[in-house]
Amino acid sequence: MIEVPEAFARSTVGREGEAGARWVAELPGIVDGILERWGCAPDGEVVHGGVGVIVPVRWRGAATAVVKVSFPHSGNIHEPDAFAAWGGRGAVLLHERDDERYAMLLERVHTSTLAEVKDGDEIVKVAGRINHRLAVPAPPGLPRLRERADAWVRQLRADTEELDSVPSLRAVDAAVATVRELGRVQPDTLVHGDLHARNILRADREPWLAVDPKGYAGDPAYDGGTLLKSRALTLLEADDMGKAVHRILDIFSEAAELDRARVRRWAQFHAVQAAFWGRRHGFRIARSGPGRDRLTEFADKLAELLTEHA
Image (cartoon, rainbow, N blue to C red; front, side):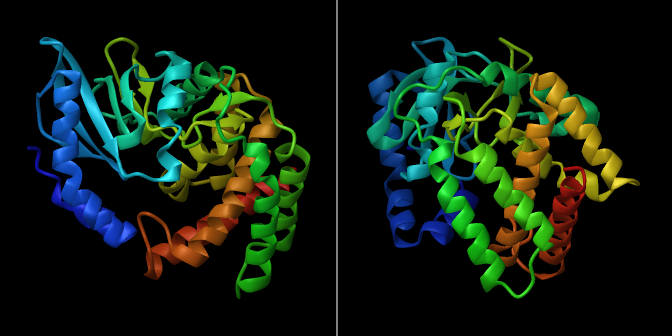
């Protein structure tokens, strides 16, 4: 049986409570059953992401692959649907799936990510090209981003009314306008939903391939905002943050073959969301304290910068 990484077990239980503890206890048996069913043999150290473990395997005797098993959660349901629709176009190949156990047999890629590339422009360019390749017709059954528009507006208004400090009201109003003007009418295009440099890995079949999609149908420009947020630490160190932000927008929009104004508007919406989220919950890399305050201040500034160029 596999050994569940301690850090993964701890974070899962901390996030999911008793249900997470039960699932972690059952996970080695789940993985064993899947390996036997798909004819896989372990072939390396078990690693993990935020919501699942990844087991390197030999498949059909010689082929390399990985088995990924995720915590059963609504946010993980449509990952295999996205992989199936892409068929290896810009993303790892899906070989087998077990939706009941939230398990997939996937193409094995390298562990190094696009985030490790030193050239920031190259990171953004590659992400934009991946975004373009992933923009295929969405299959039926995927969650449509347009269906979340009303909830987005309600949450933005509730955050503004309930929190003691908020981004500028001008920035909030611009985010609401984006949802009303762009959010309610979106194409049925498959979008990754969490596109950033750590979710793009080096590969052999292609230089870079995407992993860990959410699997939404909507505007491909939506993912420009997730990419921009992921560049936060780099932007914080920039001599001219405004110039750096707009360079990212220029490079990403051109590489993704998207309208720059739409990318900017979605990025501004994401920045306002992040500013509110940070106030309520903190951030992945800073849940509280000065680190959270610094990132919240950054999100406010980013939202304002992107509003200024409306």
